[in-house]
Image (cartoon, rainbow, N blue to C red):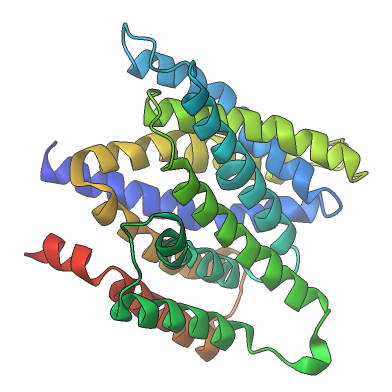
Length: 303
């Protein structure tokens, strides 16, 4: 892959995912009482597009179909945590906090994954620098949330907890799926996880009593849904895994820390959200935490 193509893919993923937090906020204005249903629509549409695309990319082989027990476990982990659980909590949390805060808190997931891997994967012991990195990430969250005991239980605090839960879901799904030596192609397993996660969230929305209707939705909602499902999910995931195949997972993970920057700019332009010193400072701490937690990997990248 040429350097220009790599840069283009990296930029596309950062821009697509950065704009997704703003699109979620816009869509929620039309469906304020149905965040999980909204999330399910994103995943269902993306999955319907992504599964056939995965079959085409797989060529003549059948690695796009989950066949073995390990394949099903990987898809199940992805649907329950990475796509289903994460999106449900992300959409629910964004009802109460700004797009910028949402993207920064969600970007904590690689730091959480590093800490989790130390307990789940025997060979991934947590070093001293990684431990400090995880603590810095947590401190960054505290700075952003600036918890006030008198406001515990308030909508803003609940939204932040939902978003942290979304980051934890991605970390759990990422680390957990690595435990199973699956034969299915990575793009295909993610595509199936999108589709299955969408079905799971549709059932969840029904069980929660959310109105499963788009009667109040206007053109702006449909544009935001199209952007989320196609641009920021179906196409972005293919681009993301193409990057992993070409430059490795460690380098590709760095895109997570460009996403909040894009979100901040787009949210100021389109939603007139303001940037606070605590948000910028908290994000800086999370980035420092990521660098420390992945110091050895980053050193190899820069070598």
